[in-house]
Image (cartoon, rainbow, N blue to C red; front, side, top):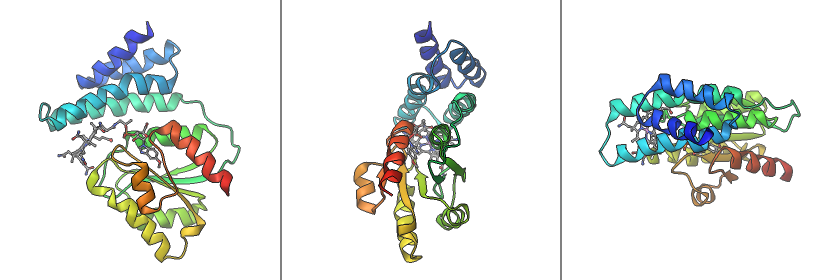
Amino acid sequence: MSDKTLAEAAQAITNGDAEKAVDLAKRGLDEGIEPLKLLDQGFVPGINEVGDLFSKGKLFIPMLIKSATAMEKATEIINAAIPKGEEVAQGRVVLGTVQGDVHDIGKTIVVALFKANGFEVLDLGRDVPNDKIIEEAEKFGADVIGTSTLLTTTMVLQKELEEELKRAGIRDKYKTIIGGAPVTQRWADRIGADAYAHDASDGVKKLKALLKKG
Ligand code: B1M
């Protein structure tokens, strides 16, 4: 039963059918499918297929937007179903998608999972300038600054954030974590970020490790 729901979830995204995606998100949760499984094995393969078709020129912007809307609506329901973490004060994280980039579906999943694991998270949203990220981190008393980017053209903003923190003399106050589809461990090493995470669960692991080191 649940395999059928997962396959249908992917299909609803490739069809750009928001109503169906919402129904399937609810149905999947009712069937007892774990929220992350529902995303990773249901909806995410659907949006990845859309991305592949788009890059091959077999699908165009209006359909990309329809599929993205369906994905956003389904993700909203599933994120809300991720169990809320106990306030165990694991640490404070400021997180956003870098300036010039409006992709936020993955970032929002990361935020939900960080919160579920007891981290206090300030979600700055998408298209956020680096100076705003730093200003908010200072005000929030963050331990960690996280950035997401899905565009190769905006990855450089993650590098510039490292540089801005150094210039301001506050790089040592924070740990930094980066993610997003084109981002790699190699990029993290190159720009001097403290951690890279390939998905939301990996992000939680990396965050815990970062804060343990002190
Ligand atoms: Co666009 N888009 N898009 N898009 N889009 C990509 C990224 C692209 C790869 C598609 C393609 O060509 N195959 C391509 C980028 C190419 C490149 O840079 N090399 C692309 C393009 C070109 C564009 C536009 C330029 C198109 C245009 O207008 N001509 C435009 C850019 C606008 C802008 O930002 N300035 C654009 C617009 C859009 C939409 C608005 C329609 C929509 C976004 C809606 C939204 O986010 N609210 C959209 C979508 C949906 C996609 C694809 C299809 C799917 C992205 C997604 O949501 N994935 C994407 C193709 C793809 O990636 N396969 C594509 C699902 C999500 C769960 O995964 O975001 O990777 P992801 O997040 C994961 C991990 O990466 C990680 O954990 C998450 C959960 O597991 N992670 C972190 C992410 N952030 C993290 C942070 C961490 C840790 C882990 O710590 C801080």
